[in-house]
Image (cartoon, rainbow, N blue to C red; front, side, top):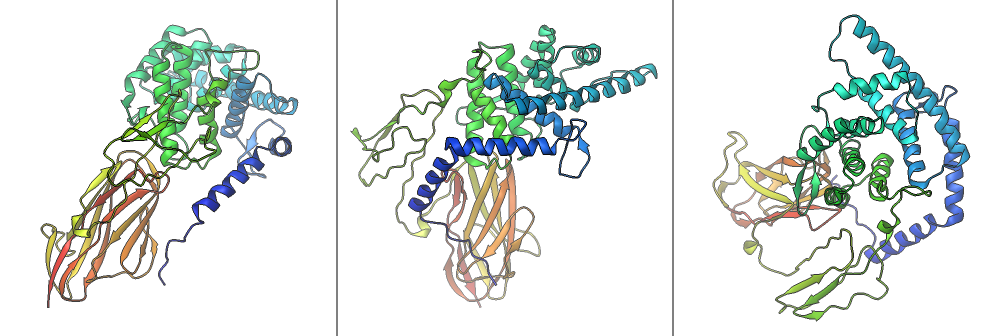
Length: 481
């Protein structure tokens, strides 16, 4: 049987439910109860040696206490004080990490005695040292030894490694070397007005669940500490984080916590209450929208909301003006909706480009142009090439096919990287993740009748941000018996 895409709730109902859920989530009593439950669960997970297992019943993993200690140290830095129970969890985790650092130093010194050259701390050890800088851990012989090795390391590290190394070296008095790492970070960054500043290099490790966002956050923190006057670069990097949120689902707490830390922490305005820049929580004023010089009235009750949508019905409008007066980063999109014959639809791309080709499946040759001459019984292959300018989550592709085409595969199913669902007049493809770059999908069809036919358009669109989409126009088919 064919699987069709499920229909969602009406927009108004969905938004109403979302607001109700947010109101319940932010209730002070509910928050306090949830916090107490989380602290209790965290205490139960911590083992007697101070480590944490990945799952109850498993042995401790150094990565887990390092991550927990880092998160708690950041929370303490932002707020100025941890609850007593969390401070106890933090102290025990740091004690465990102290032992891991001692073991690391023992291994390195043994290798040094055996004649090993170019010794350097492991990535885990650097993670721990970074956590120590946040928690104010006093230097000792083991830490000093690792810092001395870190100071000698070349800048040929990952962006994440350089950022953490810069923070560690700066904390332990090696400021000049730390600034060299930060300068290397800045040189590796690239800037686009619509995306902000980011790292388009293999030195910024990529995983949609782990590395890209923590890498950006680490770079932001290093720049804030070492070059506090360079607020422009930091703001541009924060813009990239916001743009990533537009097109991706941060479905892990690590990514969300990292991003919140990057936006709220401010090392240039430390106080007794922590390093949170509360001004970033302000919503600002709505932008002013005008059409042909006439201000558009926004829906009532939208002041202060993070998202405002308005509809303009004016077929003769020639000029749209949007004026933004508030600080910070904002974005918006304009959609024009109208009817036209499928033959008049042209190709367009906004973030995602689409190219559709008709191939001979035996030879792989492209059947020339938008006009295909075929015979009943022929088998053809439709190749759709998608090019994404950034990382997207949840991209839906719809290929509206001509009436003379019948899919060879009638059943829906998961293929390499996407889900394919043949429907009555179109074949739909769903990507839960579409990384930056080129992606190709191919589907075979039989020609089952003669005549003159025309396909519909082929569209690709990010479900998270519909303004990022691409489209290719119709193909025509001349089929003979």
